[in-house]
Length: 437
Image: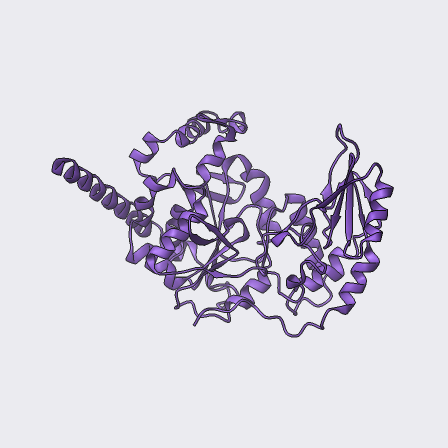
């Protein structure tokens, strides 16, 4: 028994030392001067120069997402690094392999890494990994193999981001389908102290741990980054053996931050996790109204281009962009009374079950429209097959083609929505989420 314990401790010590040496090599190899430009060419300190944005993606999607994200959401960001499950160049953008410092034993013992090894082999041989795009996990036929790798990335990305761009004030971690409202992010972070331990995002809870949802965006201060990466050097390697049995990488990152002494501060709904087309407005969801918008999620490349066009059309770009302005000049202008081949998500309960999800049986969309009109709480409806869905808040939704059950038809009570909007208190100066003192 003692021999087994001694052997376990020896293996653990070796793994920890390996992790420390690996990340130390990153710190030595990449100099801050090569990767971090805090000043413009004329030496003037520019807004956001103290912020690093770190983007997580996958090799199978990177070419279709990274260039458009850089032309839209991240068009004014100075310090951006990209991490994937394969080191490669997408045009002018270099993507680092987030997984090449995973402990060899973890990689060898887990079927999650079968795809990773095949992808590297195919890339080295042909520079074309498209044949693997739909590859399934060897033990989970309903899961894409690439998705199983994703949860291993977060803690290693955090370490490598610091190694590439150390000692910045703030670090923002996002996915390739995340849209940052950059001017708002810069204004918000300028109100807080990076020397305080800070970890902010849209709160999710799993296994008793509160953590920030990765796709919505994760904000970490210099103080917390330093504790996790420098003080607790080799942190990622210590978490590698645990990740296989966890749901997701943002949970593991939250666990690591909690263990290092930094707890989550919730930044919802400013960081909402919604796309512009799924943001709910109405009496069921009044809490968005006056809040500034900091991040959006699940945007397609086309969606990113469309929302950037909206940002560029704003009459006054010097004021904070709030959800009210998104409603007034993006949502309201798009609404019509009814639309075919469209799902406005009235069938979904939404946040806290207050957005929609009330269903009844109706034969026609006309009956569904009448049911909405008769219900004063109804702000939108959708009809599909014999089901009528009633929504208590308005969402734009998205195109959805007919299927064997029939056409998706959506309708909105724009008159009620306008009346509700007029009844809302006038918004004062935008209030950002506060840093805990």
